Image (cartoon, rainbow, N blue to C red; front, top):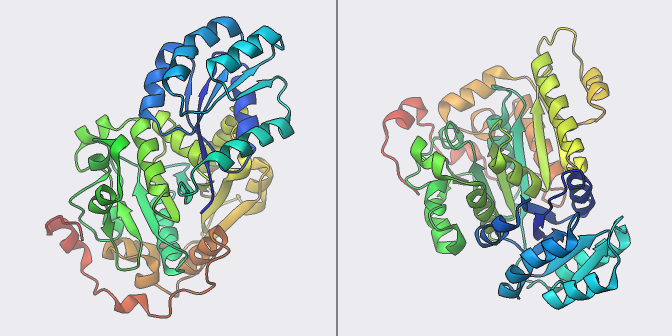
Length: 403
C-alpha cells in the first residue's frame, strides 16, 4: 500500500477549477474527496469528509475569502491548509500565514514547488495511515459487463494472494455483486453510513461478507430508501476507511456522474472504463473521456477495457475505437457468453464455473496487470473444489446472513 493525501478543495473561480484539479491530480496519491465553492459550506464539508489537507483558492477576492475561512482554520489547527492566489502582496501572504496556512502558492503554480509542499505533508502524516489501491469499474452502457468484470477481477486479485481484497457494490439501487457470488448479506454499506466518522475494524468486519475465493464483499443496501440516504460524504468516508484495512478496494460503480460517483472516481488510483464494440458504448466512452479531460481529471488513471471481443461487431474494430478515443486499450476481454452467463446463473466466479474459458484467462491477465508484484499464478488449490454449486434457486429463497 502507498501513502495518499485526501484533499478538500475550495475554489470559487469556475475557470480555474479544471486547472487546479489538473495540477493536483498530476501527482500519485493525491485524492480530491470534495470541492466547495461556497465558504459557508466549507466547515460542514471538512467535518463530513475524510480530509488530510485543505487547499483554498483565494481568488478572485483574496481578502474576503481569507476572512471567511480564517475561523475554520483556527478551529482545525490539526488540518494542514494551503493557500493559492495570483496575488503576491506581502501583507496578504503574512495574513495567510498568521491565519494558519502552511503554504502560500502563487499562480501560475510551479510544479516543483507544489510537489515539494505535498511531499512535506506526506512526510508529516502518521505512517500507519497507509492506503490500499482503489480500482473503480465503470460501464459505458447498460449490459456492458461491468459487474462481471469487477467481480471476477476482484476474485482474481484475491486468488493471486496479493493481499486483502474487498469488492464494494456502489450501485446502491440495482447492484448485483452479491448475487453474482451467491451471497445473501445481512449487513450492507448502508450500515456503515450511519456513523461514517466512527468506522473501526469491528464495524467493517461486521458489514463484510466473505466468499470462499478470499474476496470480501460490501453489498449494496437492501432497500431503496436506504440508498437514498447515502451521500457523497458517506461514500468517501467508507472507501477511505476500507483503504486503511485492505490492499485492494475494487468498486463496482454505476453508470452515473453524480456527486457520489465523481468523488469515488477522483479518489481512484485506476478507473477501468468498460466498453463494447458498439456505437452507443463507444460514443459514451468518448463523452466520458472528453468531459474528464475538460474538468482536469488525470486521464493517466483512466484505463479503457473492451469487453466481449470476438463476437460479430459489424464494422467496428478495436484499432478504430482506439483511434477515435485517442487511447490504447488497457485490456481486451474475449466474448464468452456461455461461460459468463453460466457463471452468473450459478452464482460463481469464472475461476470456479469456467476456469479454462478465454474470458477467465483474459480477466486473470488483467488482474495480474493491476497487481504486477503479485504471484504470477493462482493459488495451487483448485477453487472449483472449495464450494459446491448451489444454483439460482438457493439465491432466491435462502435466508440472508453474513458469514
